[in-house]
Amino acid sequence: MSTKNKILDAAEVLFADKGFNGTSLREITSQAEVNLAAVNYHFGSKKELIKAVMSRYMNELAPLLESALGELCIDEAKPSLIEVFSAFIEPLLHLNTFKNNGTSTFLQLLGRGYTDSQGFLRWFLTTQYPNVFDNFTAAVHKAYPELSAEEMFWRLHFTMGTIVFTMSSSDALIDIALNDFDREVDIAGVIKQVIPYVAAGVAAPIVR
Amino acid sequence: MSTKNKILDAAEVLFADKGFNGTSLREITSQAEVNLAAVNYHFGSKKELIKAVMSRYMNELAPLLESALGELCIDEAKPSLIEVFSAFIEPLLHLNTFKNNGTSTFLQLLGRGYTDSQGFLRWFLTTQYPNVFDNFTAAVHKAYPELSAEEMFWRLHFTMGTIVFTMSSSDALIDIALNDFDREVDIAGVIKQVIPYVAAGVAAPIVR
DNA sequence: TTTGGATTCAAACAGCTGTTTAAAATAGCT
DNA sequence: AGCTATTTTAAACAGCTGTTTGAATCCAAA
Image (cartoon, rainbow over all chains, first blue to last red):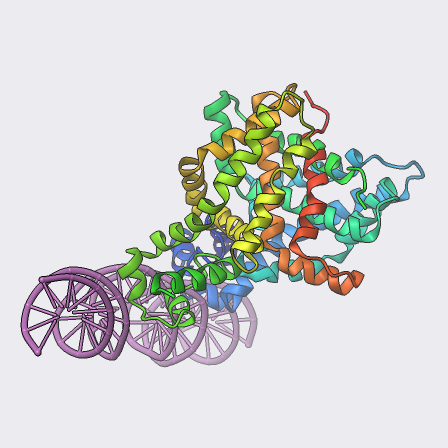
């Protein structure tokens, strides 16, 4: 196992758990059993390490998402919103085979990135992986053409909020669910619950 | 203006903007034009200052929220979910008369608190202001009695996520909306957009 | 085996963090 | 005015932060 990967593996878990600002390089390097200076040697800076952690997941996820959402646009049949959002399930769960707890870790990282660091991750994702966003909005538009661009903008950001926020606190929520309802829930279970919710939200009657 | 209030006023703006961890006592005290030691003298610690900032808003908001949601429970008529969520509008907008940009600031603080500091704010709110949560879940149950406790738990947390996440990045989103759609949106406008979304999400068909 | 580039390492850097201290200043009361 | 309690102040505290340095080590090619 290379030093670079040892750092990435340790960093992603700590970042997901405690946020980017809340995790120090010393925590990361001692968890990775690597010298402190290794981060700056291999990645240049902490900010570049954060980008590298996110890139490793996005490079795995982006092509799957692009094709899954792209197929919906190619099909002549009009997709339902449930189908559009369900297109995320398989690519997201694929991250679990890519890495242990990969799905959960990635979604938590996404949540951290949106609130930490004053939106630099939003810039990073939208500029580095614009096709995912474009295909997604195109698929939603095909499913619900009456929605104006502005209404879609808001509803997609509401959706992003639902997903990202839920996932960034999913561990705590899953614990509560276990205590209060004696129900074992995993990340796939949460996704199954959240899809009808966001689909119905996006499909809500238009207010004017 | 007392030193205590000068600190609270400066702290809430900085906390909302940069998060609790991301704001230093030196930023707060220099913005408030008071001595650095004043925070520890008047509040004891940074953590207590955070609680004080949140309490000032919650003490203003909680009674209004409790009565607005309580009325829905007393009425014999079954409320719609739109009515339940609309019960939040007036109390929340009242914060704008309580302080400049009060609504936006409070909701951003709420968002920060849920992701920063590993959920200590969730504990703080649910233990210090349980009536708000109880009345809210009771009103939702009255509007949609078919929803099981577990399903309601998840959907209410999805809703919390939508609100909190949207509001914690509302300034950035409002800017984007201004650029892309030439549309001036204020916090009330965002609330008006988000209510149909969350109402439809909670009202989504049950999946089993 | 020797050379030279890549990697690791301990140590130190300057700057920031929340908190504490003891003296100085202020305010309120007799 | 004199005294007391409250508040403000500058300074220092120990501990943490990301980053840099230069020497030590490793390892493959010559």
